[in-house]
Length: 409
Image (tube, rainbow, N blue to C red; front, side, top):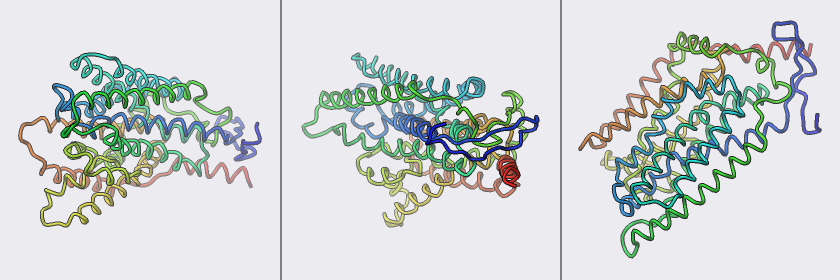
């Protein structure tokens, strides 16, 4: 054990089979968290690649318009629903390393494909392939944080370790709006060739970042440490099918946690009208989802001052997404001993379903935007009401606390 490693407990009673469990926390856990958070942030950034530069893409590439940009974003929810089950199975049976390396490789391949010099139609197809791969990688980036926290971090650090990758994913989406500063807007002396040159340079940089993250992941990203950080980390989890059955039986208890963390996510298209206009608002929201558009909501509230709309949107989303790790941890505690990644994957699958349905609604001609406000309000109410019926049961934490106190007595 290196000097950087820390003994959490000298010895604990076993998990039920009469076997003594030594728990340790390793400093290398921070490297694991850093690499995974960078991957999660990059995945969020890539999911929202085209929204900030939608107008430029429409001017420089034939066939690009609001529906193309919407579809690029919609690949995220679609692929999540398609692959969450097999990817959670992969994570549950092969561990974090295989799953995370697979996702890092998919993002690297996808971003590299966009760098291939091709005619506009072929380039658009390659962008769809990349969005498909990035969306598929999101299954692990969004489902794995509580599993990573449970496998590598002691109980007192678990919630924070869960929060960091989730915040990183949201921050990556927020930072993506700075892309509008790297790609020239149409109009004036800017030609389509200028825009295509900017886009090519941007995609090359992003491909380089993806390749670097892949190398970091392959270099060192074990599934678990040599010794577990807690008693429950070493305890066996339910088999995959049994876990799904248990989660479905407890759906009524968990419904409040399945959609609330991203209830405001589907407002993405509201931001695609004038991306430069609201860059400041979008970048200052590291703990919120960056797709609620204060500037684009202003026409819907003609009697309200702009400052009031900005404050309500930013404040509401900050509270919403700041609570995300708490909802994730609550769901994991309620579902224990179901695997953490399977529980979170089930939750995010439900909210991605609602997001996909919402984004498809924008393909309806002349649908407008006023209905979005009612959707957001209704979704929040629908999530909050079942929360009142939940009975808190911190089974996992109680076991760790009880065994820890017992070993110290």
